[in-house]
Image (tube, rainbow, N blue to C red; front, side, top):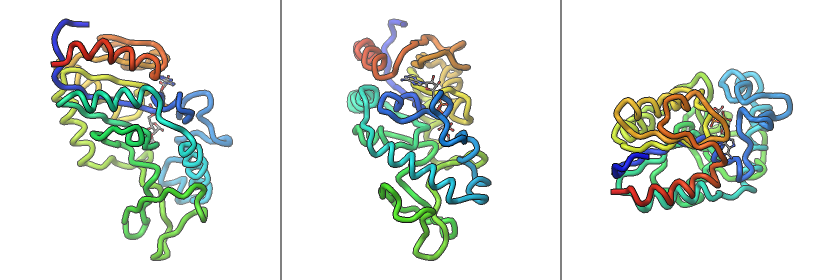
Length: 238
Ligand code: OAD
């Protein structure tokens, strides 16, 4: 690692950071639910065709996530949030575990599984029912509710994405933790930081498309490696 001090940190997380909490990743061995891949269920077309099936999948994921607790990697990011003046955590995860751990500055690029949205009126509600009282759940106006998450083929909330771009463009250290880095636009954030001169560190069990241009690639489990990395980084904060 360079000897320079880091004044501004941006972090991008993916499903791998929650793996040790017990939340299955999307592209891993246990990424299938029944026989379906995430790409087959997390789409507006799948919902249009079979809202019950899509909601059954979300109901299952919500139940699983509710029984999981944040792990040491989530906790380390809480410490970073508290210690660094210029810090932003950008996550692709919809599980809400960063907030449950205590992170405050979090941008959820793909939404949150604990929020639902009316398909007619677009009103967003918190909903923590596990299991859901009714599948698929309905709004009081009579329309269907859908998960307030971003599906394949849908655009990200422009304000959230804009804030993520700003955080990444202004950082001098970027950490990328537990993402396969194949889903856009999230996957392009690390390259953006690197192009602007940031030092890029990746933590993952295996190499990804990012690894070739990261300054450091740490192969290992996030809950083990991120706390160790933080011990090292704390000394170079300015
Ligand atoms: P993926 O399931 O694609 O990738 C998870 C990554 O985490 C893989 O690269 C694993 O090697 C790594 N990994 C697994 N366990 C780990 C551990 N204990 N420590 C460190 N790394 C570990 O998940 P994402 O990259 O988050 O989008 O997927 C991106 C998006 O695609 C998701 O947000 C979701 C998905 O389909 C939508 O639903 C729109």
